[in-house]
Amino acid sequence: MKKNLFLKSRKLHLSIGHLWGISILSLFAVFFIISCSKKEADLQDDLLVVNDITFHDGRLIFMDVTSFTDHQKWLIENQSNPQLIANKNKSLGLKSMTEYYLEGMKLEETDLKFAEYVAKYPSVFYEETYDNSTLFLLPHSKLLCYVANKDGIFQIGDEIYRIAGNYIYQTRDESMIEMLYLPKDQISDKGIKISLSQPKLAAKNDYGNRTVNFSINTKFRIVSSLREYTIYDSNTGITFWYDDIITNPQKRTLGVWIRAQLNTKSANDNGYFALCPSCTQYPISAGSDENTGLSQDVIYFAPDYQIDMSASYCPAYSRGRLIDGSVQYIYITWDDALDSTPTGTYYYTSVLNDPF
Image 1 (cartoon, one colour):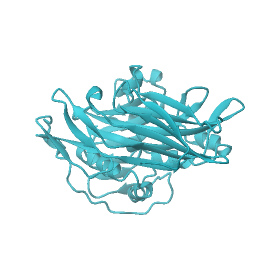
Image 2 (cartoon, helix red, strand yellow):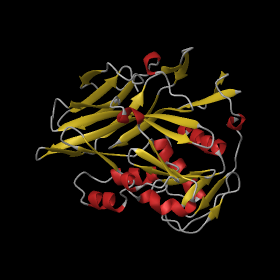
Image 3 (cartoon, one colour):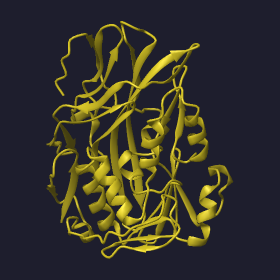
């Protein structure tokens, strides 16, 4: 059997012989979706989508892991077009966790409505303290959060999932959905499985964060993060692996670093990943996500195989532009972005020169 890997910014199907032992993962069956209208984002009515995806009780239900993987493939191929994804989700009946998140992060740093927004959608924002600041992150890869509702709920086959901070809750009993909202230490029912969604963080060997201040105005800085996420499907025994790069622009106010609205980019140049022990190399094509404010780009997605960090290479970059009397770009460079101990270099430039 063949194993399929999906990389961003290219419609690419890479087959690796003898790595796949499950015939269910003939992943590229075409599915057609009937587009229907819905009232608002907080959807209550059920919407049946004809081929392998159903909207029920406020959540997407994928018929099996194949339809889920097909949809993740479509998302990574189109992540540079968030409006297309939003339109697709609307046709399915969903306003996703990622959409709520991006909507909230567009609020100005001084807008008091941001705090109200975070309080209204607490599951959407994962708060992490870092270097005298609070980073507001998605609780999982941007890709997976595109299929979850505002509470982090979605379903694959019989398995109901909830994304919750650093963890994924999972049950096959629909009557237990309310229990998925409880804190982890309050869940003792054996009908609910809890797994880590960021294994590197759990092992205290995460890619972590890097920070560089602007030289012209040191009240502004860029925080660059590289994260690895997973989700496990117990029906098939498959673990899905994701790698995201995140660019957070910040400014210092009264000694505290808060959000800033700068022209930022999360990007990577051409690279490769390797699956060992054969360590055969496969290409990763360049791509980026650029916004006024936070940017986030999925570098890698694959079912069942974590890339070998020591044998892979993908230069990733966080970039920001500050206009303060003169124009300055700032870059944070991860020369070995897919290495668990990247050597990364920092550099500044005031030249309007952006190779990506």
